[in-house]
Length: 342
Image (cartoon, rainbow, N blue to C red; front, top):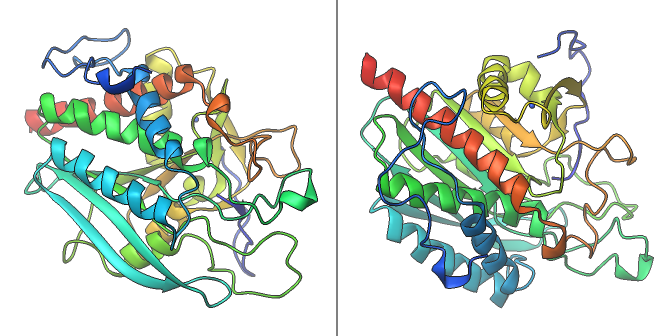
């Protein structure tokens, strides 16, 4: 994502502090065995970062995944087939949405469910499209060049595809819904001088929140992944997450700390960001947090290659995929343990 959230008049100031293995990607924890990681409260499968990196790489290999392009369509087909391999409950939510400039965008939200009848549910999500503009690149001649989006999009999806593979082999009692949002990154270029509506970002999540894949859909909580493959990530308490889902922040950051990733999930509040979780929180009202890297050394607060042509696979770190994926698995399996005990 994309730009800092513009606080509306009357919003109270927040005052409390609430963080490749090629085609053999099958060599993952799909045997059904679980290992209790140090600090985890229940046995948890081991997350395979090589496999997650492979799934990230596969997306990037299609080229920039910009709406209305062949690369976008090919990646959508690959994701659909991949998720159907892991679950028989896959929904492709197709729609046409309008970009900031009125362009009609064909989009596909890809929704995969595990234990669809379970009342207690966890929503896990990331966007799979990539930005059509490298509008933050130092070279201004590249500002209308589409980016690969290896970190900004593909890394989060790669983690969730691997998590789906693990869930297919390791049953949980809690329901899990994995949503890949489309048309998230088609907001107006930063150097476009025209005035546009503020809701030009997160078009896929806006559509889903208004038209959920299941009537009256609800989840106990949600977790969004965005730009999570950057080396040595610094995940902070992002402002929208603090406002709408502080308990979820505490749950996830506590799990990360207990299994040894406290140095990456830090106890620091940072600016609110317009991202998919904003629309999930405000439209469908599922308390949802954003796990997103924060960089104090950039003017944007995002990682240094954000919305540039350097957002490529060379800047995706397997260690980062591992620590995020293992944290998510810990949260899911601990929630499953609590559900089974009731």
